[in-house]
Structure formats: C-alpha cells, structure tokens
Length: 145
Picture 1: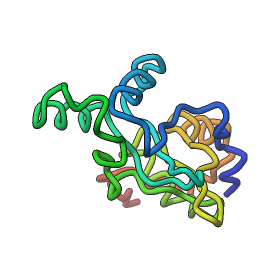
Picture 2: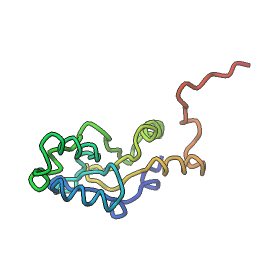
Picture 3: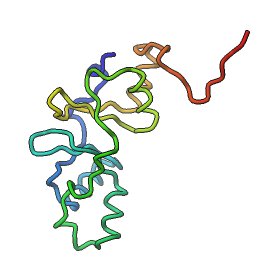
C-alpha cells in the first residue's frame, strides 16, 4: 500500500512539541480547531498524541496555575495512537482508521513526517486505490448460497 501517497505531510498538519507548555498547547489546539494532535520531541521524533481531555484532566487535578509550568510531555498519552510507517499493512491501517481520527506516520528513524486521516483512508477506498479484499466489516455475516 502506498502510505506516503495517502499521507498529509508534516508541514500541512498541526502538531505540538513535547516541551511546549500547556498554555501553548491549548492555544495551538484552539486556533487549529482539532481535539487531538501529534506531539514530537526536539529531534522531530513522534512521541505520542495529546487530546483536549488530557489537558482537562490535568487542569482539574492541579488547577490552572500550572498552565505555564507543566509541559506537554507531562500529560502525553504514549500508549495511544501509535505511529505507522510507510510499510504499514493495508488491513491494519484500515482497522486503525476505524478507531482513530488520524494515524501519525513516521520514517525509519521514528521522525514524524505526517498523518493519514480517516477521511483519507475512506477516500482511497472510494477511489478504489485500496483493494476491497482488505475491508472486513465488523459483525459481517457470511452469505450462504
């Protein structure tokens, strides 16, 4: 599968840096309108995804006086929204798109290079760029003749 051909490149995406403060992160997310964004470290490696709920829980826990003290790296969800590579299996990519709004894409060094959105996957299916044999719907019934 041509993951790179489906990918939206880094320069056209919204992402946060792990060292950004919560205030910076909230400001960027508010301006972008997204509720979840990828996070990268100083070397450009993908380190996880942060959701607006992660900010909310931290603020409820510690109060708003932490906005300029706490860094994104302190609230990031590293076990959620794992990155794909250009070698990603088509079936796995489709399954992930069913449960995630976007899939971060990294190169062989783990550096963030872009995202594939659920919309991108669906559009590629509609354009028949993805073979329909890879699509198995949940609870699909077998037809018996």
